[in-house]
Length: 395
Image 1: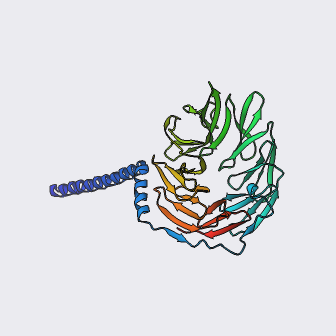
Image 2 (image 1 turned 90 degrees about the horizontal axis):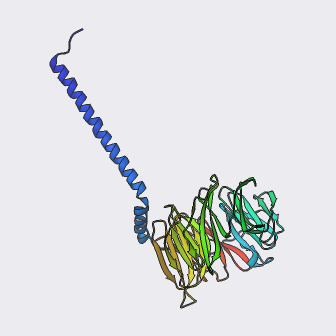
């Protein structure tokens, strides 16, 4: 076998060196790209709202004509009291609940089924394709889908309230001997998976986004003051994950976890921000009465009355990037609904859509008869005194 000549060996060595340099250069580029991607991901709460604000400022307001959809609408509610009729979003469809029936509808207004219930002072909670129905003060509840009642449960105590998670587990707070209130959590089949009680009175239960735990808001009286604490529970843990700082002389209506890990506690006279371990970071007092609120993992929207002019109102928007925005409307707000980015606001004459930066994205003239609404993609349904209507609502 012939030996390689010296100049051939030098060429091969140079080629290998050149290939190594090319490989290292490509590896460096890949690592830089990966580092940039990770940096963008971990700082997304900083730059995404900034980027969205720029887009919001360049977006014009879509003016919808507010024309009522015909066909299967309007749906009459004249045979029931509006105060006891509830319009509830059910996936991409909807429910009309009355004192006697749970009525399931397709988005186009076709009624799919009607299931009778016997609960007075009834409440409806929705999960993933399931509905929990109960009566305040009763000791029974029903779980159903849009075809049939799946099961009923008889409880040991009277029901104060109940909640249902997105994975169809549900939590029920009842009366109990030895406790002012008692929490029992059931899986989707109605089997007990968790229990909680202490000396405090439970007034709110909110499932975590994962569905594997919940926040329990409970109060007790100490030296003449009402002290509320939020307890973080995980259903696979025996011990409480954390007990929040004391929240004094107010009632927590909802504890909502944001995508950044912070918790927004909506109270009857203020809104409080807590960190992921329950430490209070700050609060904003309402200048007047709370009207309505809604919450998602990115934004909490709160409507409050104007303390000076009752014909006006204010909208408080709290974002996951730690910003809070407050702005005034010239009409009193009736109802609010928010998704991951935007907030719908119903007034006496308008349905407006606002971005997280407060930019008005869309609007439509509506009837003063409407008392509530739900948004289904690019359509909106309204609950009125005598009927339910629907309009196209694009943005």
